[in-house]
Structures are given as C-alpha cells and as structure tokens.
Length: 135
Image (cartoon, rainbow, N blue to C red; front, side, top):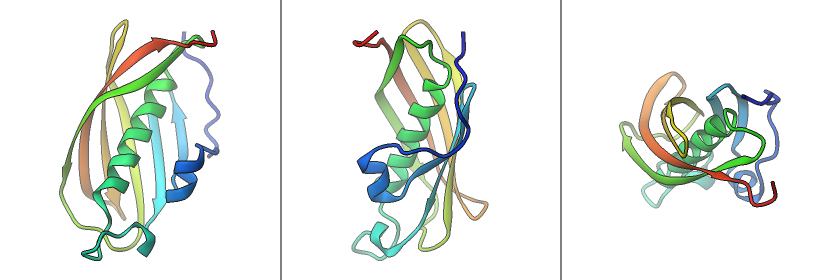
C-alpha cells in the first residue's frame, strides 16, 4: 500500500538546508527536487560542484522511493552512477526522479537533473528497502 505524501516543500534536515535543497513534489514513486545555484555551490574552477548534483540525485531518489514504501519501511542508498553532461554556473536546478523497479528489498531509480530546461546530469541508483527500527 502506498502512503499519502504531502506534495508541499518541507524541511529535509541540516544538510539540505546547507545547500538550499527542497522538494517541489514527492508522491507515488516520483519526486522533484529544486535548488537555486549560487557561488556557494561552486568548485575551485568556478562551476557547480558535482557533489551538489550528486546530492540532489541521492535525495531525489530517496524521496521517490520513500513515497512508495509502507509505513514500517525505510530506504538507504546502495549505489548511484551519475553522468555529468554540462557545466552549470547560474539558474535553478530541478531533479526529476522516477522509481523504475521495486522488489521486496531493492528499489531502482533514475533521475534527470536539468538547469533551466537543459539536461546537465543523468543518474541511476539502487537502494535497499529496510524495515524501520522504530516500527
């Protein structure tokens, strides 16, 4: 059974606040994360640090999978493969994530990270589905 997820942005914790990441939507095996690019996100070469994009993919995948889990389940990243396609220096990033496979204890997700409508990264991830310890 899928649980209802509020589609409004919400606090994702200290790390997400640190980089300015939030959910625009999250439900039924789908999520969209957004982030406004600033110089605080740049690497020494003056472009967006790849770790920011990776963090968006990881968070988006976790959110999309979490939206399809039972109340007594949680998830954790096993691995993510990401391909960076274009450097970013300004604008708003969006990370659209879809759950493409879910078995008893594994979820596979894919996401597209775009900057102002241009694809800048693509990722594929595998997550473990676990019983919550507090359940």
